[in-house]
Length: 139
Image 1 (cartoon, rainbow, N blue to C red):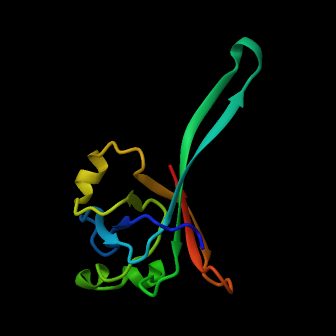
Image 2 (tube, rainbow, N blue to C red):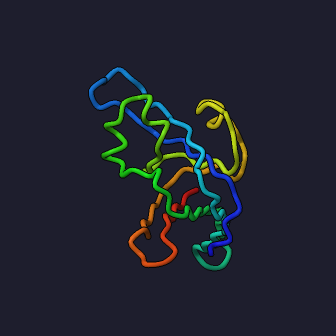
């Protein structure tokens, strides 16, 4: 339906609200469904004449078909550590890695792969009659 043919690994960000000393932890999760991945160029022009400039940036988008492995963030956050790896959630600032990887988060942050992006927008389309999915976008 959506031309879904890509594996996607999410790195789900978590910070324990009860432990002020703990840093962020990222849980890798290979989505159990093939997804659609798309990159688009965004061009913006500012000014006119000699003082004008054009900025070009890449925006990335993934469509994730519905799967029962999804939990809302507030439910996923209260799972025990070992349970978090059995489900996924979608939150702003999570990391999307197109492909299958066993990398740890530190490796992904150091990776300069163009297709890796941080989620900046999430659209929940799972209430539609047909084509239930989530759409995430980022840079």
